[in-house]
Length: 306
Ligand code: 13P
Ligand code: SF4
Image (cartoon, rainbow, N blue to C red; front, top):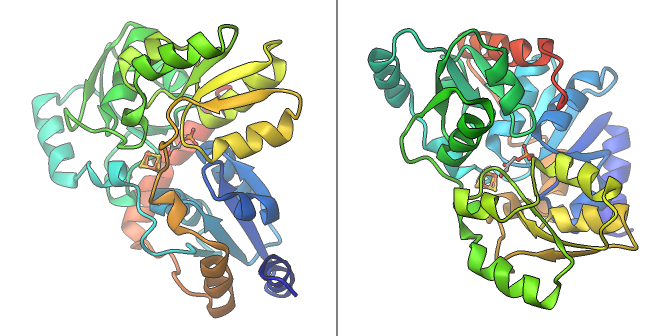
């Protein structure tokens, strides 16, 4: 029996469900019960009433969100090292400093944050619903962390003042994309439509025809008549885009745009984590309770991303 089949067998025996982010390796995406963006996977985690174990093939903050929303389930991360560097950029100290400087502004945190940070915020958002979440708030100035690029994007879209905390937070993978590379690709593929994740720089977003989360890009690619797409997000999404749209062509806007943290999860590690039920996600209860309020508030909004 090959490793993929062994995982599927083990998953059934253990009443486990495998959730995989759009950036996971192809072999993991192929055996996952659900593949999606951060908000879709959080929702799936909540819907899985029968499952006793959630094997969350993604990075730390996504598995943490699954645990917060499913306190009675065992949530496993295939690789302990799969940690999002951007989520680590926002410390509780930084949040406290921001709140002292802007005591009357609500704090919105991107789900790409640790539970310890989420515990301090008023509401969470994802890249799919950040604009709607900020528009829903009765405030003209909002504190937002940790991605400076997403903060800038939301400020432009909403017309509100969005103050980034920290001032410099970023995703190392999305900052690899450069408009110059897109210009060169456009010479080769003049009819191509450019899609970019909002974590890209403003210069990159400016050359995009569509800006959205990974799953919003999937929806857009399906309904758009174009045959060729230049994609500015982590390379894993191209597998799903290709599978969903076999007659369309998808080109990565920069060939080395790989999130090394997401790619730490392998079939071998997923198998071992499931077999030994190891790398169990735990969050202290007081933190989980507060963080859950911020996540629940986001879900209650029923944004288009939800
Ligand atoms: P999505 O919300 O689009 O899944 O993005 C998560 C992420 O980590 C982007 O780098
Ligand atoms: Fe974090 Fe960027 Fe990797 Fe997404 S792509 S998990 S934001 S480092």
